[in-house]
Image 1 (spheres, rainbow, N blue to C red):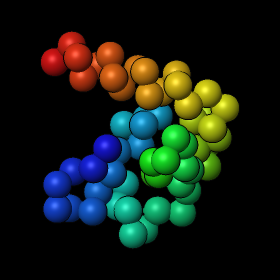
Image 2: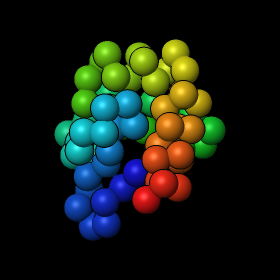
Image 3: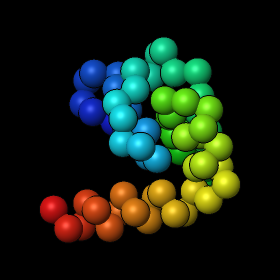
Length: 63
């Protein structure tokens, strides 16, 4: 998830803002690149990406 014009992305695991140009950990899934604050968050995502993507989707629908 990108915040407009800032180059900032949301870590889909912990919801932390990360600066895209400074990110060391990223992973591609279904044609999109996801950015992470740490190796642990990236690994958790890679182990079960749908868990984190479906959680974020459900969260957005509740707002």
